[in-house]
Length: 146
Image 1 (spheres, rainbow, N blue to C red):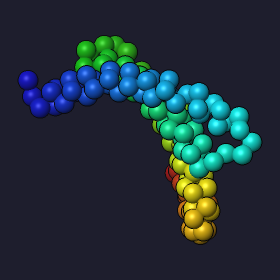
Image 2: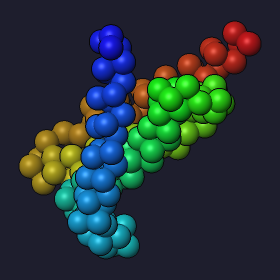
Image 3: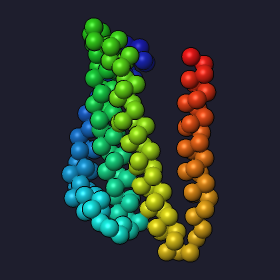
Protein backbone atom coordinates (compact mmCIF):
# COMPACT_ATOMS: atom_id res chain seq x y z
CA UNK A 1 0.00 0.00 0.00
CA UNK A 2 1.36 3.40 -0.93
CA UNK A 3 1.18 6.56 1.16
CA UNK A 4 -1.63 8.03 -0.98
CA UNK A 5 -3.93 5.01 -0.41
CA UNK A 6 -3.17 5.17 3.32
CA UNK A 7 -4.07 8.89 3.34
CA UNK A 8 -7.36 8.12 1.52
CA UNK A 9 -8.22 5.44 4.09
CA UNK A 10 -7.46 7.80 6.98
CA UNK A 11 -9.48 10.61 5.39
CA UNK A 12 -12.47 8.38 4.66
CA UNK A 13 -12.29 6.92 8.17
CA UNK A 14 -12.15 10.38 9.79
CA UNK A 15 -15.24 11.41 7.82
CA UNK A 16 -17.41 9.16 10.01
CA UNK A 17 -16.53 10.71 13.41
CA UNK A 18 -16.54 14.18 11.83
CA UNK A 19 -20.17 13.73 10.78
CA UNK A 20 -21.25 12.05 14.01
CA UNK A 21 -19.56 14.55 16.31
CA UNK A 22 -20.89 17.43 14.22
CA UNK A 23 -24.38 16.02 14.72
CA UNK A 24 -23.77 15.97 18.49
CA UNK A 25 -22.73 19.66 18.42
CA UNK A 26 -25.86 20.48 16.40
CA UNK A 27 -28.08 18.64 18.88
CA UNK A 28 -26.39 20.21 21.92
CA UNK A 29 -26.49 23.79 20.61
CA UNK A 30 -29.57 23.53 18.35
CA UNK A 31 -32.15 24.79 20.86
CA UNK A 32 -29.95 27.69 21.92
CA UNK A 33 -29.36 28.57 18.29
CA UNK A 34 -33.09 28.55 17.52
CA UNK A 35 -33.75 30.73 20.55
CA UNK A 36 -31.05 33.14 19.41
CA UNK A 37 -32.48 33.18 15.89
CA UNK A 38 -35.94 34.06 17.24
CA UNK A 39 -34.60 36.71 19.62
CA UNK A 40 -35.20 40.34 18.72
CA UNK A 41 -32.10 41.52 20.64
CA UNK A 42 -29.22 39.12 20.02
CA UNK A 43 -26.16 39.15 22.22
CA UNK A 44 -22.64 38.44 21.03
CA UNK A 45 -23.01 34.92 22.40
CA UNK A 46 -26.23 34.45 20.42
CA UNK A 47 -24.41 35.34 17.20
CA UNK A 48 -21.54 33.01 18.04
CA UNK A 49 -23.91 30.12 18.75
CA UNK A 50 -25.75 30.68 15.46
CA UNK A 51 -22.41 30.77 13.65
CA UNK A 52 -21.33 27.52 15.25
CA UNK A 53 -24.55 25.77 14.22
CA UNK A 54 -24.40 27.02 10.63
CA UNK A 55 -20.75 26.05 10.41
CA UNK A 56 -21.30 22.52 11.75
CA UNK A 57 -24.39 21.91 9.61
CA UNK A 58 -22.53 23.03 6.49
CA UNK A 59 -19.42 21.07 7.41
CA UNK A 60 -21.30 17.86 8.16
CA UNK A 61 -23.27 18.02 4.89
CA UNK A 62 -20.06 18.83 3.01
CA UNK A 63 -18.42 15.81 4.63
CA UNK A 64 -21.33 13.56 3.68
CA UNK A 65 -21.12 14.59 0.02
CA UNK A 66 -17.35 14.43 -0.29
CA UNK A 67 -17.19 11.26 1.79
CA UNK A 68 -19.45 9.65 -0.81
CA UNK A 69 -17.38 11.07 -3.68
CA UNK A 70 -14.04 9.97 -2.25
CA UNK A 71 -15.53 6.63 -1.21
CA UNK A 72 -16.68 6.07 -4.78
CA UNK A 73 -13.20 7.01 -5.99
CA UNK A 74 -11.53 4.65 -3.50
CA UNK A 75 -13.83 1.79 -4.49
CA UNK A 76 -13.47 2.65 -8.21
CA UNK A 77 -17.22 2.98 -8.64
CA UNK A 78 -18.79 4.28 -11.85
CA UNK A 79 -20.45 7.13 -9.92
CA UNK A 80 -17.05 8.65 -9.07
CA UNK A 81 -16.80 10.95 -12.11
CA UNK A 82 -20.36 12.24 -11.73
CA UNK A 83 -19.87 12.92 -8.02
CA UNK A 84 -16.67 14.88 -8.62
CA UNK A 85 -18.16 16.72 -11.59
CA UNK A 86 -21.25 17.76 -9.61
CA UNK A 87 -19.32 18.50 -6.41
CA UNK A 88 -19.39 22.21 -7.15
CA UNK A 89 -23.15 22.16 -6.49
CA UNK A 90 -22.53 20.75 -3.02
CA UNK A 91 -19.71 23.21 -2.35
CA UNK A 92 -21.87 26.28 -2.93
CA UNK A 93 -24.41 25.76 -0.11
CA UNK A 94 -22.48 23.51 2.26
CA UNK A 95 -19.02 25.04 2.08
CA UNK A 96 -19.10 28.57 0.70
CA UNK A 97 -22.55 29.90 1.72
CA UNK A 98 -22.45 28.18 5.11
CA UNK A 99 -18.93 29.56 5.60
CA UNK A 100 -19.99 33.09 4.71
CA UNK A 101 -23.04 32.95 7.00
CA UNK A 102 -21.03 31.43 9.86
CA UNK A 103 -18.33 34.08 9.45
CA UNK A 104 -20.98 36.82 9.35
CA UNK A 105 -22.48 35.49 12.60
CA UNK A 106 -19.06 35.35 14.26
CA UNK A 107 -18.23 38.86 13.09
CA UNK A 108 -21.56 40.13 14.45
CA UNK A 109 -20.74 38.38 17.72
CA UNK A 110 -17.34 40.08 17.79
CA UNK A 111 -18.95 43.44 16.99
CA UNK A 112 -21.37 42.98 19.89
CA UNK A 113 -18.47 42.19 22.18
CA UNK A 114 -16.29 45.04 20.91
CA UNK A 115 -19.17 47.51 21.30
CA UNK A 116 -19.50 46.52 24.94
CA UNK A 117 -15.74 47.02 25.39
CA UNK A 118 -15.72 50.37 23.59
CA UNK A 119 -13.56 49.06 20.73
CA UNK A 120 -13.92 50.37 17.20
CA UNK A 121 -15.57 48.00 14.73
CA UNK A 122 -14.94 50.05 11.58
CA UNK A 123 -12.09 47.79 10.34
CA UNK A 124 -14.37 44.76 10.55
CA UNK A 125 -17.07 46.50 8.51
CA UNK A 126 -14.43 47.44 5.96
CA UNK A 127 -13.21 43.83 5.70
CA UNK A 128 -16.78 42.58 5.15
CA UNK A 129 -17.33 45.22 2.46
CA UNK A 130 -14.01 44.41 0.76
CA UNK A 131 -14.79 40.68 0.76
CA UNK A 132 -18.12 41.34 -0.98
CA UNK A 133 -16.46 43.56 -3.56
CA UNK A 134 -13.74 40.95 -4.18
CA UNK A 135 -16.44 38.31 -4.66
CA UNK A 136 -18.11 40.41 -7.35
CA UNK A 137 -14.79 41.27 -9.03
CA UNK A 138 -13.76 37.60 -9.07
CA UNK A 139 -17.12 36.55 -10.54
CA UNK A 140 -17.00 39.21 -13.26
CA UNK A 141 -13.36 38.37 -14.05
CA UNK A 142 -14.10 34.66 -14.37
CA UNK A 143 -17.14 35.37 -16.54
CA UNK A 144 -15.02 37.43 -18.94
CA UNK A 145 -12.60 34.49 -19.30
CA UNK A 146 -15.37 32.21 -20.63
